Length: 111
Image 1 (cartoon, one colour):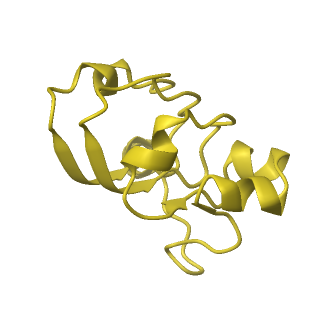
Image 2: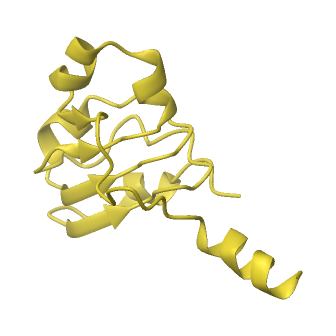
């Protein structure tokens, strides 16, 4: 079960991840620090259990983060959400809520 991503802390210097989509996973934490030269173009953590965003997300994520339905959005004020460049009010997927791929496979094979 994916509750943390320690591999992010071990990315080589000057790495660029164009997109990192972690929607609808049981993610609870990001590493407290990553190499200061690593950047992420688009980070999406909608419908996750993440409550705290490390400081690096404010400077090393190049676009507003998609956080709709996350524990962070449910436990913070609109001002706090704006401060961290988080989008909580709308989903990047519109009315469609993505599901964890493993859950989708289970629903097919366990039916």
